[in-house]
Image 1 (tube, one colour):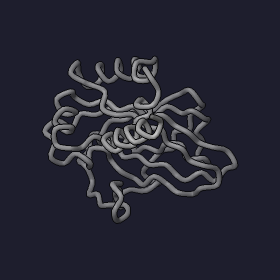
Image 2 (cartoon, rainbow, N blue to C red; image 1 turned 90 degrees about the vertical axis):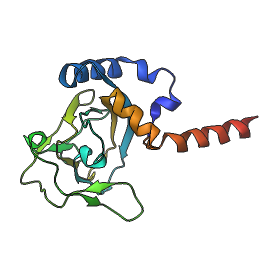
Image 3 (cartoon, rainbow, N blue to C red; image 1 turned 30 degrees about the vertical axis):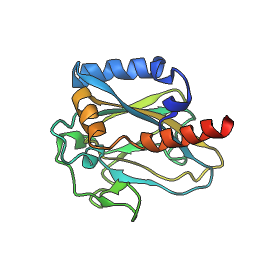
Length: 187
């Protein structure tokens, strides 16, 4: 999580600028950068990202508008774990979710399958965009190639602030602690 913490000005680069412009068009002028992350699927690792809706993570938030931009850093194919989406799911209610695994902050829904979804293979450098209510998932990587992606997320600025004030920062506090430890070790 938070590669922009490690790479100076990453959050001021062209991916962020374009994603933010699209988020403003689709969600409104009050959007703000929420978080970014890198996802790595090693070759021959069949761990999937389970079906879920991002909005399920924010049940108590008054404004749930959200847009995620998923940028393929390698060609994303069905076999190496491209994104799958359920068309029109952003117009439906959030489905019931549960913890994917005990002790891990990952949600999943059992109320979805590939039969409902559509795979979205894209070449490296391309992106997919999805609404916070869009059902999505990825298969594992059954190929001999890496599959990497960079994700940037945007939500209303008031909601990002509300979330931070309530202690949820997508892991950034933990990263800051590690960075401070690294700085102490370097001195």
